[in-house]
Image (cartoon, rainbow, N blue to C red; front, side):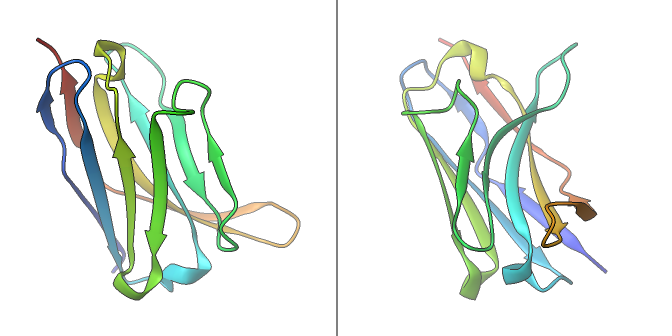
Length: 121
């Protein structure tokens, strides 16, 4: 059974920091592209950051310069360090594990249940 368990969300003031963690089980973790997505109320889920099996990283424009994604395969965990948080970062943050083939096609997808991040004074 595949499980992705997020942690680290919470309430933080504008300008503050949080580090999200997502630990996976039931998958060959190092073979999956890992990503963080978020969904704010009445908005579509959007990619925040992803890190491929070869370490290639992508960030949403809104995350560049403020967020850092890393992965530690030995701990089957992916992290999202979020600094200089803004109220517009408020959302439910989801961890994703995607199996990508050599042609870039998404063969399989797993999701965590999400962790809430609220940025407010």
